[in-house]
Image (tube, rainbow, N blue to C red):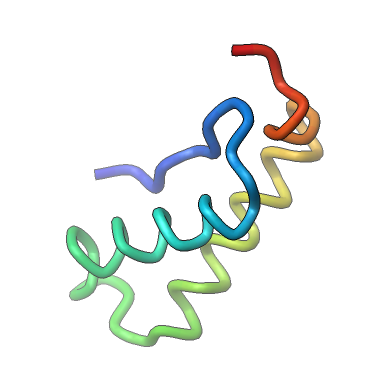
Length: 60
């Protein structure tokens, strides 16, 4: 399963938690290190901000 993108109006902390849970549940074998999983989630958040604007201000 692909790494989830932030949702409209989702706070950073909420997204990171949801992303970490997703990777731990579905891709733990691919990313066994927790620090690596966190880095993936934070970089996905940063990329989303750069490409789409901050999700907390995105339209629904």
